[in-house]
Length: 269
Image (cartoon, rainbow, N blue to C red; front, side, top):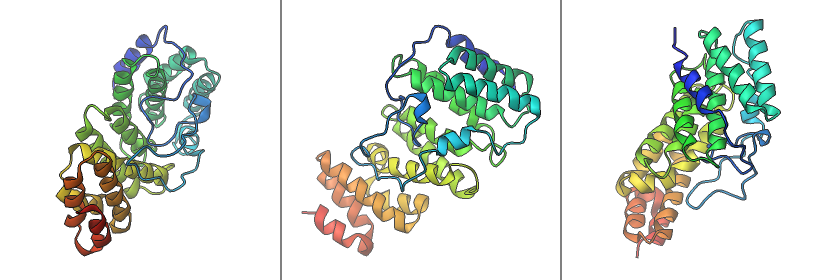
């Protein structure tokens, strides 16, 4: 049986939390439902490869808890918490999610309750950056529960990667890879395709911060397959070039060999 200590920590730390109105921070790998305060982005940041049109309803579908097996009591508690969250009654929502974790620790809805803590704290981190650590802890708790019983596993691991962006890019890169691996292994789970493509789109920028240019092609091909790797390599070269790292851009393109010959001609002087 898992101890609900973290749920209690999340509950106690949320007292008096401000209610931000801006987009969630950190940036989600798969966009958070608009009911939680996010806004439609204008486009992918520099160096990110655009995801392949995931459904805008994907996170909402995931968190609707249609798939997990649960008793009527468990589901009623979860639905009450979800309803409170959607109405903006976050303190009440946290209490209900915590009660689910405490009273039904073996429920398949527990990972989704921890995910709710993560999403709520990620949203509040916009106004209070210290909440980012609580969001990370919540996503880590979700990730402890393996798929396929935990339908939120891949999504939570991708979100975990978001919490590392910019200050521990090696962990971010590892998290995105794990999310892609999980989504690829369990394509039948909700959000799998969206998680996979969106996490892939984060790879070039994060790889540029911590990876070796001449190993990029091998890494991208192993993680995403050859066809997608070409797009990711092009994105990486673009990141390097925009950062003034022309030697790295050339090295990354040349290491791919004939398959990236045109890219190498453009990147190399």
